[in-house]
Image (cartoon, rainbow, N blue to C red):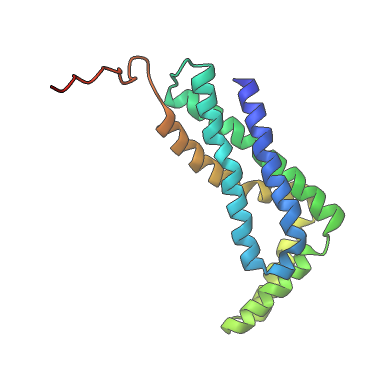
Length: 180
């Protein structure tokens, strides 16, 4: 089980990390709203490896059988490894290459508040609070982990339910009667 979890978890993590490296530096140019859509789309795509990992485990290790709980364990393991890769990538990008990310994002939020007639001061105060939180590596890591994990959890639950197969539940292949 460990080999499957590590292999598929690292592949999933690599996909999300590469997509993050490819898109985050351009978030202010493509727009933060579009960047959010691109980011979550890449997270969903990377978590497709959860489905394939559970299926691989079922077919190769479980001889075509897997319980929901075992499928969930495999899927959540893959999800956790992928999320850790995502967090590590963000930490490296944020602290080494984009320390001004929150200022740019804050400016975007202020413009959005102005356009909607909202309170600019309230948005600025909130951005300042988030900037302080993001400057703490542990808080930053925790908040970053919360982004992809719920997506991975949902995909794990769906995949475990779809792929579970108990002993004797495989459909017998009976030949169809010949028509005369």
